[in-house]
Each structure stands twice: as structure tokens, then as C-alpha cells.
Image (cartoon, rainbow, N blue to C red; front, side, top):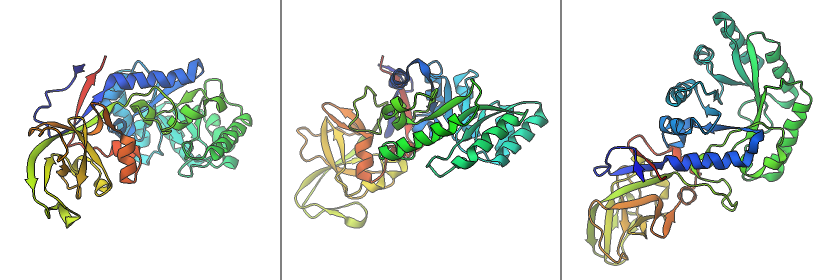
Amino acid sequence: MTLLSPDQSTLRCWAEIDLSAIRHNARVCQALLGDRAELMAIVKADAYGHGLERVATALANEVEWFGVANVREALRARTAAGTEIPVLILSPAISEEIPLIVEGRFSASVSTLAEVEAFSEEAKSRGLVAKIHAVADTGMGRMGARPDEFGNLVRAILASPHCELEGVETHFPSADEDEAFTKDQIETFRSLLDSLDLPDSCRVHLGNSAGLLAFQDQTPFANLARPGLALYGISPFSETPHDLRPALQLKTRITLVRDVPEGTSISYGRTFISERPMRLATLGVGYGDGYPRALSGRNAHVLIGGHRCPLLGRVTMDQIVVDISALPENPAIGEEAILIGRQGEEEITADETAMKAGTIPWEVLTGITSRVERVYRHSG
């Protein structure tokens, strides 16, 4: 293992990120696509909390595209990758972003004729051509042209001398939950494509991580895929076999060890009161680091010495308390504790953390705050 960041001995909470695992996951995704499709790495939201710049640099030679949410992320990805790799902005652009998108030669996702006109006018004023991906709303509902309007959107882009129809796209809202609806989406999108005369260079994409892992056989017409969660080693389908490797471990340290008598209340609200003498450890992590407060009272655990230790009471901003009474040996102050990751034979996954917090792994990962140092390594 090669560490790529400064010594973390003074850190109270940090995330160790294995860049080799991210590259491995990109290769797994590409293998599922075969030679017929390119790979777009979704690095929005600071690469799902893994660090946009380091992830973009690590993947620059593994993928053909980057996908981001806004022009600031696009600039960061392009600068980090050190290449003219295409970058698609997946969200609608506000008017102030349009000049930067056109001048930066980034690609934009559009849903309306008004957006096409705005990009066309900006590109004309600069003597450039705007790179456009037309979005079809086949069921997501947050952006895109409705199916009966999509053809007009595509034709407007093709008719503009200042726009290039670089791609057509749609998005799955429930590919990990509703197979029948997803199949209907695929057929709707396929029918839309069949009704259009698209240039051979046009990218066709609809596969997020769930789509890529479960619906490849039904989307042979797609030549680009957009995995996000899978790149970071997590499958939306817990029951689906895969060779993905989780890239992130979230760690903290023991800051205090105490023995308390029966009747001791723990943390705000006194929601936990000991029913016996206990040995407790205080850990240097809280919701200020992105450790979900919703884990309070939800049978959550941390790993210390390879053993599961129950979380007691409410998660506070900077600290949590866990029960270490059952540990075979007393841990030392400063010893590592695992919040997400593996230690010995035990593992706490982002999926487990999300389930107990009543949320999704996407939110757990992107919720890790800037106070948490990212420590990068290569596992070989």
C-alpha cells in the first residue's frame, strides 16, 4: 500500500480512499459495456465525497468522459485531468453559466427550445459551436422534453448552425427498484430514437449504475454509459454478483475511555441510560463530519479491534459514545475505529450505514464533510 497524503496520526476523523479500487471499478464497468460503448465517470458532488480532483486524475486514462452537475465542477474536472477529455454538465445551466460552458467547450444538457436558443446565441456571438445533449423525459420528471416534444427539441439543435447535437439522453428514476417501469422507459426511448435521423457521431446514453449493471442486454443501441455509485465500489443491487471494490473507508479515533455505573445517561436528550456498569469509548466524530445523526438509537455499530461496538445515545456534532464493555482488551487512546469499512473479519458498509440511518448510500458518501481529511492510497 502506498499512501498519497500526509501522515494522518493527528487526524481525529479521516476518509481513506483507494484510487486503485476506483480504477478497478471503472474497468469492471467497461467490461460490462464491451467495445460498443464509452464510459462516462460521474464525478459530481466532489466525486461522491471521494475528492473530484484526485478521482478525475486517477481516471483520466480509464474513461472517455466525465459527468458533473455544474460548470464549476466541469472546470475542476478538466483542470485535474490535464486533458481535453469531454465533460458533460448533467443539470440545466443557469444563464450565467452558458458563456463559460460555450467558451470552455463543455457539453450541456438541454430540455427546451429556449435553452437551445440561448446556447445558439452565445455560441454565435463567440464564433463557436455549442455542444448539446438533448434530454428526453421518459419518467424521471425533473428535466427533459416530454416524448411528444423530444423530436422538435432534437430537430431544433440539428437546424442551428451554432449547435452540435453531440448526444441524446434520458435517465432512470428506479432501475434498482422497478424493473417493469425501467423496461417501459427503455422502449419509450428506443421508439424516440427510431423516429429521428441522428448523426452517426451522436452519443446515446441512459445507463446509470443500476442501468449498466442490470439492463445492458436491453440497451444495445446505447454507446455511452454514466456510472456513478458503481465507480466507487457500491452496487445499487445488494443481491447482484459483481466484482466492485469499495474505495472509501471512514475512520476516527478513540479520544477517551471511561467506566460508568448503572444509571448513567449518555448524550443529549438522555435517550440512553445504562442498565449496568459499562466501559465506554468516546470517538472523535459526529454529524459535523457527516456521520449521520439519524443513526442515533438505530442499532448502529463501529469497529474497534475487529469487533462491533454499539453506538449509544445521540450522535452529536463532534463526538459519539460507544459501548466497549465486551472487547477482550482495552483499546488505547488514539486507536483507530472504523465507521465505514473493514477491520479484521468484520465490515460496516455504506449500505448498512444508509439503511440504519433511513437514507441511501449516495447521501452517506456525499454527506462526508470538508472537515474530514481525505487520505489517498494505492492498494496495488
